[in-house]
Image 1 (cartoon, rainbow, N blue to C red):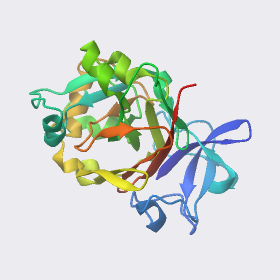
Image 2 (image 1 turned 180 degrees about the vertical axis):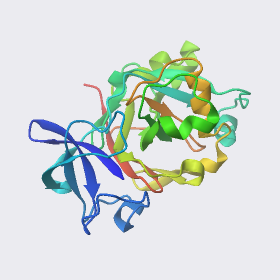
Image 3 (image 1 turned 30 degrees about the horizontal axis):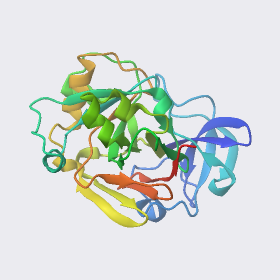
Length: 280
């Protein structure tokens, strides 16, 4: 099932993404349009309230339904925090001249860095000469949790979405720590929706810039897999419903300039696209 957060004029709501057959109880497989990143033939069936919380009855539909071209998709979640993992693909660590860490390398991105599909990534051109894309699979937590053993990790995951861990690469090197480089407003695009039925063990991830493939890998190549990451992070801090964990980016990262269009396409989820502008 695909859960979107969207706006109709000034009203914001959550909804279930419905295919042209009217199915709101998807199996987690992407239909033809989602598999290629498209939205043709999709609509959104509004749900009452938010999708997080206890219960197995599933979302309650209000009866309202909107063609996807008549709404604005927003970031599918507004997390209290984004925990991210660095150097979690061996080839990415190698391309930046780093060793593969023995344990997950964690850092935080602020909640104010989140934007949604179609929103602009703003390059802080007066502060940074190189701003990079980093396509990633993102985990969305569905319940409050702490000290989760690997075997119970599926119980606390609500679903998955696409993410772009935008990074001011020169500031990352200059500062010696990553807060400023990773924390600018607009540096965490998420979307286009949350897929609750995905098996994340081996899905394809592709990042393109202006239609040219820059990153292409599979989640089966993660150094630390999703159960290990969730268990590791929740041993440190409590994760709340809607919090996000970025799982790391594969090789192929590179710079963005004003005018670029960058897309992260993940098999079984869909495509997250953002344009790039310079700060004024």
